[in-house]
Amino acid sequence: MIPELHIEDYNYPLTDERIAKYPLAERDSSKLLRYIDGHVDEHIFRDLPSLLPEDAIMVFNDTKVVPARLHFQRSTGAHIEIFCLEPVSPNEYNLAFAQTERCVWKCVIGNAKRWKDDILSLYNPQESKEIAAMDLKARQIERDGQTGLVEFTWSDGSPFSKVLESCGNVPIPPYLNRETESIDLERYQTLYAHIRGSVAAPTAGLHFTENVLERIRERGIDTETVCLHVGAGTFLPVKSSNVAEHSMHREPFVVSRDFIQKLVESDRPVIAVGTTSVRTLESLYYIGVSIIETGSPADVAQWAPYERVYPYTTEESLAAIVKYLDDNNLPALVAGTRIIIVPGFAFRIVSRLVTNFHQPESTLILLVSAFVGGDWRTIYDYALSHGFRFLSYGDSSLLFRA
Image 1 (cartoon, rainbow, N blue to C red):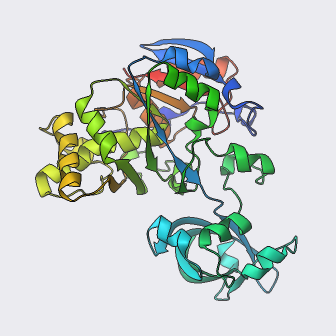
Image 2 (cartoon, one colour):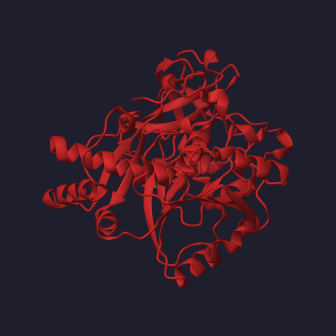
Image 3 (cartoon, rainbow, N blue to C red):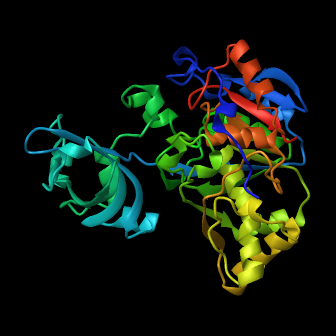
């Protein structure tokens, strides 16, 4: 049964001065709140390794933020911002990034009403010869409100990944209320970012340094990666009072066969770095259910976890994924999820969570509440009264599951 939840019950007073507009000078110098069974204490992020169980598995999302904000100009002089969300033709990220002449993306279009049917040229105020040689153009194929399909063409033979690197800006969150600056090119990216595709950083990972990662491994903690590409939906507020009316966007993810096998064989505690890692890991159970019942994986529907009681153990479900991958000679599970994690969710894999402090009335607050058994206000009241910094460039927390 879909839980009856009202988003205004997940509000708190977040003033502008509490939002971290810039990262600290050192990634691991941020504050770290630890929550265990109703008790809160305070540390520095570089203390994290000593706070973790030695026999754990720690899971990171190694997605990489792409410079997906492009600024174009009409012949009239009007400026149009185009924010690439996900590839449509071709619809696979690596193929889209490899194109050398043309591709189509689903985009958010700023100043959309001023873009008629004309073809736009990239705005190149610095008159860069490299950018001029690319001759990047945008044509609107269709539009639905602020989003639409945009065809990009260019003429110098570069792969589209290089076009974005040369012409685009890192899409920092809109609540920072500033333009992208040089510091964001380095710091709005995790050290272990590897696979291009996100339009927002998995920000829990921004605190990790090589030193912290090395000390985690020295404690005997296994580190594993998943890849979920974070979509622009991460910025969208829940606009309906009734959470059941909120629609989650699909996000693609990849998990290796060997890691899923490790989860089948192990009862070690699993520590997720970030809500994206949680959503990926907890989606695996429902992928396995699909394989058991239909013979093939299917994307996880938003409310699938709440619609019925599932008779399979977590081990049975994960083992079904491994068998499917082996039978089809596949090295990894490639799927998508729209899962929403709210109070009442039955966690099956993750027992610890490293995460930042999230926006009021957001799906991420709902996830945190679900994880700590509804006691999210204890965490946020402490953070508000003890000078913690909030949102993407803000401080961190280590939460133990209720």
